Image (cartoon, rainbow over the protein chains, first blue to last red):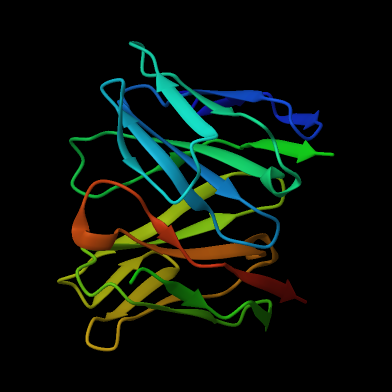
Length: 114
Length: 112
């Protein structure tokens, strides 16, 4: 089982640019959540997708958007990048039928904004 | 409100027990979790506990939950150098299937 895979692993952008990050969930999982982890901090919830719809959203501006495809994979898009968007972006998948919100995380995409 | 707090750093000798503490604010949290993050990696779920339990043991790991004080702890018995990592406490606010709220993490350093 490949677990959760994310791409790219590292990328560098400049302020004002746009970025797309990709995530393939663990086999059997139907829900994808995205988290932002700044250096030295815990992950912060961005949003969660289930059945191709955004089910819940954290305290992030509209510059952050996402999508879930019929095969459950997901994309995170960030527009008009700011220096403060530099972080590790983590994708996590889960199965809605589980009793607990047990997340399986990918290794992350590290974004540097210059 | 939604907030999870942890001490930032813990240093222990190899073979000793480690205890990592966490406090949370949402009394309606149904599940509480412990995740481990090694350098350059994502988060790995170690264990979780349902809020109607006060203890859960899984091999070298023991989780204690004091729901009255909203305090969670993780004890690692016989700590090894491979346990060196950052440990995150997390809650599911409101008991839903949605977001997790994480603490800032406790960096565990294990020395010989």
